Image 1: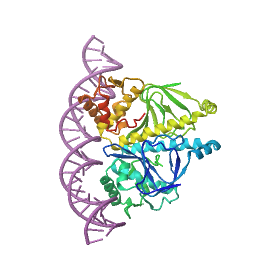
Image 2: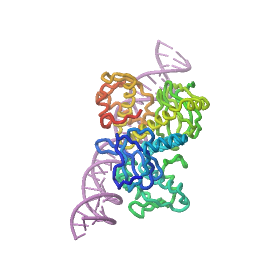
Image 3: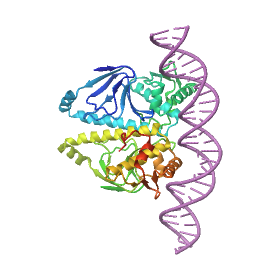
Image 4: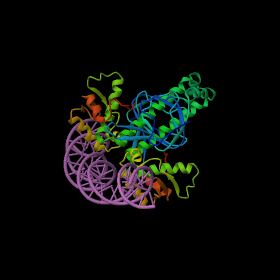
Length: 207
Length: 207
DNA sequence: CGGCCTGTTGAAGACATTCAAATGGTGTGG
DNA sequence: CCACACCATTTGAATGTCTTCAACAGGCCG
């Protein structure tokens, strides 16, 4: 069990990650930089998500806490024991990795083909969807806090801070969402938000 | 062992893929559509790549041959036998899935943060890199055929046909590549091409 | 109170897209 | 064998979206 402060690096690209860990609370980003400062966030780590895989691969991206973060880490030795006693565990790791792969590929569609408004809507939809899965009533306004600053959201969406801000106010202006606080979002019309994402029906939302 | 013609669908999104198959020759794309016609190619299947995973997940994207394609498929029953007799196989599947995940995340950086020229350069670099890994001399001009039409390349790069075309001629004009035929590419200056990708050093190329 | 950080808003500019037309190569039919 | 049609690709000009540059507002902490 380990805790990190906002902005603290959990691991860096190139590190050999020996442990496997699950997010207990808070959030972190997986990000990759382009040397001249451009950054792309390639994945989010939200509660219940997994960091690292058995085998201790070399990390290809930075892992940075975006809020106070608590991880539950499993030492390599203990993990080996668990895997030996629970053969089904490896299949679970494969499943979860496949799920991450699908999420990454879905996000490629967001980055490659969607407009700024659709990207922001997709981001909000992903977070709202998490709330609904976690038990929120889809027929009432869904509220949550953004796990990312505008800058981080921009890096996740392949946009600039300013564009993210403009699209959020645009969605607010059009009555799709409310922005009660800097980080807080209230989705007034979930169905409308889904339309704004440009996706067909409920087509594969990233985790 | 099965063959497909150019443009033929190998599988469609939503299909339950029972088999695992490796690409013997030819190429295919994994693609996801947005209903209004926009398409994003989320992965390439080139010789030696793998399609499908043990477990028979539901496919989240279409699989379409882009050239005459030959697959070597393994029936579920045989696969089960192999996995039973070769416990290390599951670890290999996990490794390969992790590699695919890293490739997808790398490509997210291309789609989210790179300019048109950098995207096209990244695409060519990926293909040139394959040739070098396959034994081509990196100090001589590297030649290969594009596995995709301009339209497919555009869908892979998150650009339009016209932009892809313009960037290719731009790279040709600047002496980085030659375009001997419609599909053929000859990289005159591999190091220069790498610079054009916008990547640092040799930073994680997609497979 | 003043400084700093994050976020918002405005105006000008750049890059990729869109619309349109021309080129080139391939295959078919006369 | 040549003419023609068709397709992918290239090239050109105009448009649009997002970015860039800039200024401002609000919240938090010293």
